[in-house]
Picture 1 (cartoon, rainbow, N blue to C red):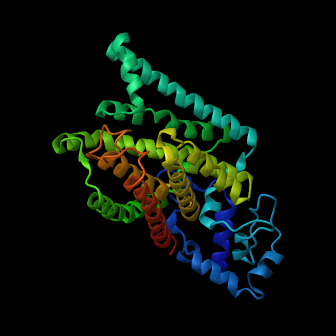
Picture 2 (picture 1 turned 90 degrees about the vertical axis):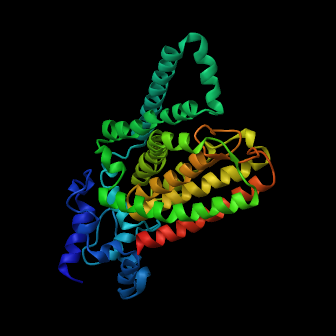
Length: 378
């Protein structure tokens, strides 16, 4: 193997102060990495080329406890750790800053910082509502946020995620001494994943919406002219809401757990299960298991793409596209309908076409994941 390739492996895995984590990234960004390093298939081929195959590589490698020590003579061995599962090299590289201070007490305290920041911004919004609407009208308006049936209420619900967006970056900087931009990953990787995910999801979801409209025509909600006027406000706030969730679950939680644990069930499974449980909606009735399953599948898809690419771009792109269709195009008839162009005639607890739609949407998300993953890892 060429010495240059070995040297790059050592540089990529050992030097955590690489400028590639800057925002925008410079230095060891995706375009600066050799194509062989970015290709999962070629990396596996290198391992197969070692005499004795991958088993010999596992037997030869003597990794440090945190599984970061590279083998200069067997670069592909850095994919393996004794008693652990393989992880994408891009993800390993992205964890360099997270490994510096991976203690669990820092993570738990960081979650407290995030909760405090979220509640603090929420209190500011509530106080602003009282200041604008007055003490008599504000309580009723705020109670209506549970359904968010008007554009103003839906925009306010989306704005409550400001604290969740800022919180993970504050926790990463204050408790783990990380560049907050490292949560996103290298800029070029983030932007590529974001573009590809949206390019794959949008046409497939458009066909899904058309199929649903053919099965059961949706009801008009907002006039088209008003809907278009609201888009400049709605789109950035949906990006804020989806970005906040990705920063918390696939950014801060997943990265810091992965820096501390090798077990995939912990660093990928735990944030995904928490993410799914936060979608618990008792009003869904018999459809509640499907709603939880849908959130679980999406969480696993987003977690996997974040690992494979070493950035949050693909996860944020998929989340944005999914919520744009669910909040701004066709929304359920009983929740968060204020910004939707159309609403479904039945509620989320109705068994029938809505149930079929949830099942199909889970299968479609799996299809989107397969295509997106294939494009981003080839």
